[in-house]
Image 1 (cartoon, rainbow, N blue to C red):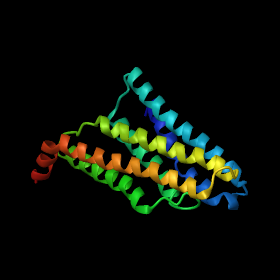
Image 2: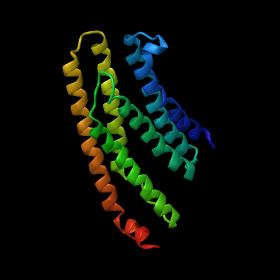
Image 3: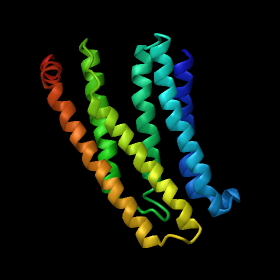
Image 4: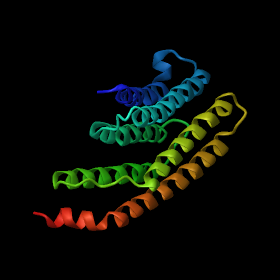
Length: 196
């Protein structure tokens, strides 16, 4: 464990707070208008900790195998937790859109694990990093839009429409990044699958 790892673990620990706050605010006795600012603060802390852990790992020459596993895992847990949360309540994202995020990360994680067991690592792709950035931007956008919605300045219909279109764009790019990943690593994947 090093300093960068602790920032990564912070992101993982923050993730369950999103559904708890969004779905359980009444039970917690928190006014609805407080929920978007609290969620936005937590999301920004999570995303900035992602930037910080990468910076610390490179600056201190502490890029480790554990970090290479934890970092994308923390991205997946954070974003998928948030988007699954948004299938409920006011946002009402379609489950099929969110499943694109889940299946993409599930299949690629499985391939990485399989290849690692065969003795070679699959390199990360720029498209994968951009996918994480795009998902983060869409998540922040939805939470930001919740502020005028809860204050009565944005209609539910418009709020849901913008959220859906933004999530659709992220889902399409997420699917494209999976295709890019499979194609770029096709020889390694074939080697791993053929090596019985």
